[in-house]
Length: 200
Image (tube, rainbow, N blue to C red):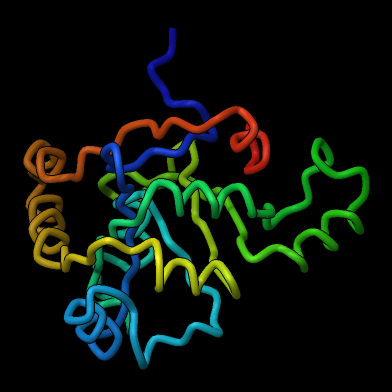
């Protein structure tokens, strides 16, 4: 029997009240957010903002916090109620014929949805693609306002951790790197939510 996770499964650090997601920004956005405890100017609410529960997928996206404008990685705790509201109002970024009768029907829902969900290959410590997927949640319009004004309970700078994990990987000490990783586990979602965001 395989120990591999399901292809589509939300995995995250969470407790009874909050779930941790990650974003990476330049100092000009990250530092004011850390001081304010939420995102403030020059953060732009008009742009879609993508939140990622997977630490290693964030490492892949940011190149271990080395890519331009992604030099600071933030761990953002948001309410589980808010996260689940986002999923309940989400539309997949790709056409799924098991959920939509036509591509036109999917496009219509996509246009009207404040949240988008996509599944990308999860990553290992070498940032190589794995067979199972990590969820990315894109927030726009009402969802961004709720995120900034209501859902965020804390913001932490985890860039030093990123550098420490990357140094261990670079040194070939994968055991140490794994010990440093945030302890992500399957996040419990009602069947209706899993069906909405792309059960496979």
